[in-house]
Image (cartoon, rainbow, N blue to C red; front, side, top):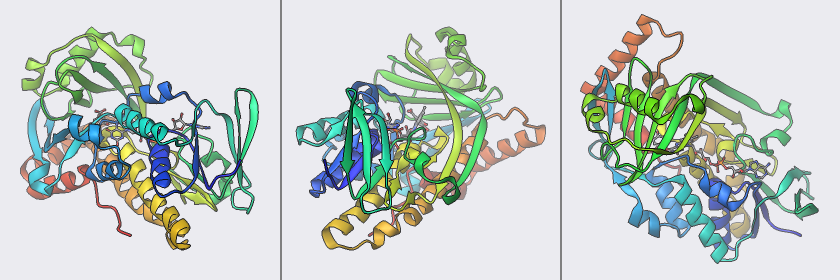
Length: 392
Ligand code: FAD
Ligand code: DHB
């Protein structure tokens, strides 16, 4: 079997890249370790930047997004149980869209299958080989049978735990990492959202976030310690703690109910440089991780796809490899700004175990400054709605 681009990982970045390449008649195959149901069931991102929406539009999957996504013109921030609003629209003339990652992957799977794209689910032992040589290939097992696909390029879209980054010799990459001493416990509940916009709360007990998927589906998160277990948090305990941390008005009006999903995610910042090794290109979480506080992970995965897709397109359509060669530099410039923003949101809103009274005062004054300074709000707003992509 031979193709032009083998895409390892059929999460949002791999699916989007596949669809865009197919629209330009650039042959590709997606190798995904899990079943389609598993990928579509993973409840993760919820906030999409305009750049992400435009890329999904380019891929031809904006119909349901336009009908069912919710435009948000602002967010609420709170500290000491008191909330204030950041008017994203007024400050940046942009908004964000609330539309779940589950729906993005469903839409992409559907269109790729309808247009006879090539996704191989439940592919085991996927391994890129001879990367950087003329005869690059990827091997994998399906139903116990060994397969080999020859290719020009490999796109490693296989997330933080994937194989692609691991095949790069350690001496050829630099890794930058910060592990935060806490996690997020998230629940999904079939209840109306507490407010029409998201609330990010800094509280003495730790961070809390009120988000949503639609008018009757809410997503809430609270900061927990690293050794906390989901089993220790029955719904009653979760709601009590969430109410304690939200602004008073929200905690008084929140409608609680049974949770239909509950999970804990650790928080880390991570960057691998460069984002390619010869003709193996890392995309999205395979190359970098942000703590979820700034809602940047999926959006960054999409901006990587933008840079790689444009590089591959120029290579195949115009025989020009300049942008492909610059992929890592271009992508990393945007990645680091999102790493900085997510780190800032995380340090400003969470309680650190070693936090001193000095650190506490700094957080309080940072938030007071934000509440009262348009300049400070603008910095937050332009990062939150998403920094621009570099044009081609
Ligand atoms: P992934 O989604 O991890 O996809 C990688 C795929 O590769 C998976 O399907 C996996 O099964 C497959 N794979 C792995 N190993 C192999 C292998 N060896 N062979 C073949 N396939 C393999 N981001 C935002 O932008 N906004 C948000 O609001 C937001 N909220 C979040 C909330 C939480 C709680 C979490 C945990 C994350 C959140 N994120 C958010 C981050 C976002 O979900 C990720 O950044 C995004 O999923 C990255 O997409 P990806 O395609 O790069 O990787
Ligand atoms: C959601 C997740 C985030 O990390 C965030 O910053 C905002 C919203 C969500 O899952 O809805």
